[in-house]
Amino acid sequence: MALVDIVVPQLSESVAEATLLQWKKKPGEAVARDEILIEIETDKVVLEVPSPEAGVLASIIQADGATVVAGQQIAVVDTEGKAGAVAPAPAAAATVTPPTTPAPAAQAPASSGGVAMPAAAKIMADNNLTPGQVQGTGKDGRVLKGDVLNTLQAPKPAVSTVAAAPALQSVPAPINPSALLEGRPEQRVPMSRLRQRVAERLVQSQSTAAILTTFNEVNMQPVMDLRTKYKDKFEKEHGVKIGFMSFFVKAAVYALKKYPVVNASVDGTDIVYHGYFDIGVAVGSPRGLVVPILRNVDQMSFADIEKKIAEFGKKAQDGKLSMEDMTGGTFSISNGGTFGSMLSTPIINPPQSAILGVHATKERVVVENGQVVVRPMNYLAMSYDHRIIDGREAVLTLVAMKDALEDPARILLDL
Image (tube, rainbow, N blue to C red; front, side):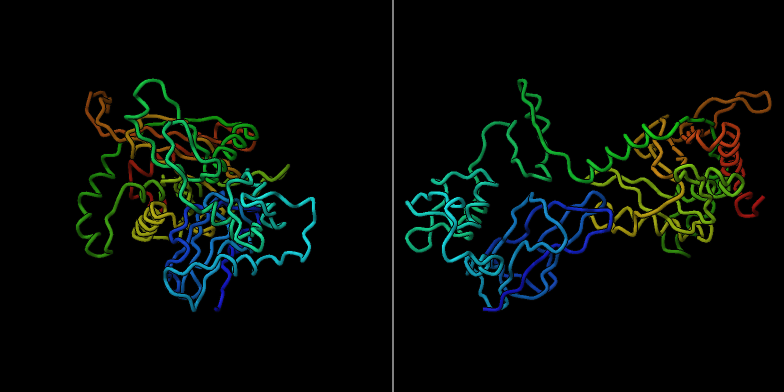
């Protein structure tokens, strides 16, 4: 038997611990080399843990929902095993060697009348298992670590009430809206690590920054006309469709160059001016809001931006955004218009000092040169940190974005 330990991969410096989501294999099932065994959720991203070798999943050390740290052993793969063969005992022996004479204080009675070995007793206590719930297979009925792990991994009986939820469940089962509308039930599910981190950062932003929001309206007809005229040629040439977000990103960089303080950040009592433009684009994912970063946007073409946004969107849906994808950023754009939002006040993403909120483009009645006309209008909202950005700079920054969108030639000619 050749056993290979499966351990938690290295986490980023700012991440102390992570949560195991759901094992994709059960003990005794065959696994291929590089096959994903489980996903691990941190407060930033979801990491995939592949099997380093082909073989059989011999033992699962940490169950779904467990809190783990970098380098911690979570499972064992037997590279010489056959499917259907489970080897919990060797896995337990690989992680802990029980003393010849267990300390009395660490013992716990087992269902067979024996005692629990120290490692087994600790796991039982951590998981609130009673002596009668674990059948010992060791000498004289002693409960081994593998016995406890097998008990924890055994299928749990179905729970009849909607309100019940496993204590360690990290990713709750989908909520059934119909069931919640029958009678007066409640369902309590734990926040994912990502959702907890989002909540923490939003509260931090509200409590540490002096947030104000300025608004303006933009006639999107020039952008729509330009997009309609060149969309087929653009897609044929670059292999990607041209959307509206690339125009908003380019307009943002156009304005940030004119007013660098909006692209800056606060560090204690210092203002840090950034000589680069890394724009975060907020996108939704099954586990919550994420903000991947477009780096050096001033050096990117429209096609580069569209391709990168499409890549981020797919990664977000698949849960494959990396730490690198979401680290840094000097300014953010949130597009609530995708979901039909007319107006909102976006919250700044720390340590950035401003964020642009884009909304749905709708035909509205406006006045141009004394005439009442119908135009496709979009309301823009820019929230900013008043500690370093004065109202004048904030308003003029949004006006610059408006000018760039209503006359896209400004972006190309840098006027």
